[in-house]
Image (cartoon, rainbow, N blue to C red; front, side):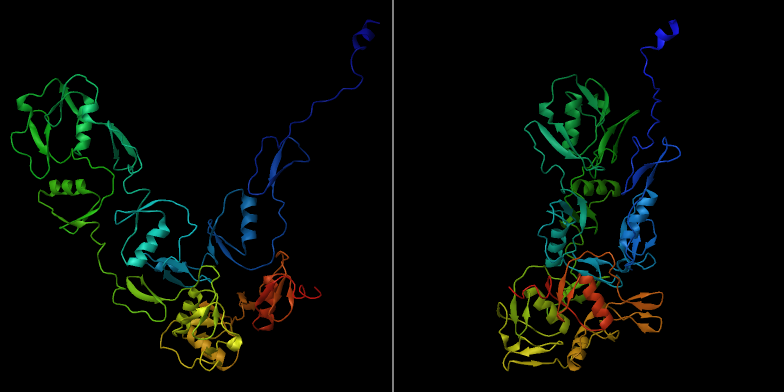
Length: 522
């Protein structure tokens, strides 16, 4: 009976404690999800459940020095290894970055071609939309961002580089009160604030390392900052007469009090981090006048100021006497002047009718075409051309006077090879257009430089070389975004349009977004 009364108020069933959750508090990155071990729920592991990647061959080089067949495969590897892998560049890792052998100066920067095989120096097209990230130029002036610095250097053909991130004088935006002074520390360039000597609170007098007496340690430090001299306390009370240099300190040297006597030294000269460059007559650039005075001290010889600004600022650009025709711009590539045509224009619609009778999307596009054809084309009028010459094709040029399409017949001799969509190498883009017009063939530039062979052939019409065979691009996994082709057919997306152009070996452009028959029946 006693036993029954003890268990009468207890539940009839025993519920065991839940096993610990192995995924509790476990963090999985890069798209992975935590899954509990079915045999031991207390254990969890990160599992990648990403769908299969498309078979598209568009190799990229990862920051782990591995080549991936496309960006999807790189992201998959990132998930599996649970470590960040960035895209270093398009193309396989074994492919050398063409910009490594190119040095651009006077404001131009190195730009890879779309195929990653060649490189050219280009000036910035524009800086609209670039965030404000102030940089200090080697000319000692502040610029809103690197783009504006390069644009200014290109426009004026001045050899200006980014000297520092941030303002040339870090104290520029700091508020100096009547009682404090701001000074940039030399090594870190961080702004530091000090009291003015006259603003220092009263304290005990002391003798400083320059043999001068100061009312307080605060006054000693502030006085040294104003004179670009680092001072230290030697002893309390006033300095004695013997604690001063018997000889006059020359070449900006400073008297230093030490046992058993005193001497003149360059060591106390303490220059700030503000960048206000000047060129000494010794041919060296100094970050500010203090560094020039310290150099005078160390060399024990006068170094007069040659001019304000760095010594190389006024070195004439190699482009000064270089004449570029047909809208090409001169840039300095590997210290040599080179005429380069623009490869891209800002996507701002501003149609113009060229003197060749062709309508261009913008004046920039007109100049780029004139440069590529090595032909003078100027604006006939704003807006599209009349219909008289609207049907010129295959690179033909409209004769504005006769209203007839005329093929260009000759090109200025130049060796700037391009690879055509027919797999042939042409001496210049102009020669490709002459051939296209003469044979009435759809030809376009697929890459800068000579065509690269794939086995015994050259891949054309956008085909890529895969295991010594030319293969047209695969489009598996591409999003559905229909486009109407210039051949009147509707394609699932632009990738399918390019693939069809590759398979048929003929030019097919995107005529408009959406289905070709969308306008019918309305």
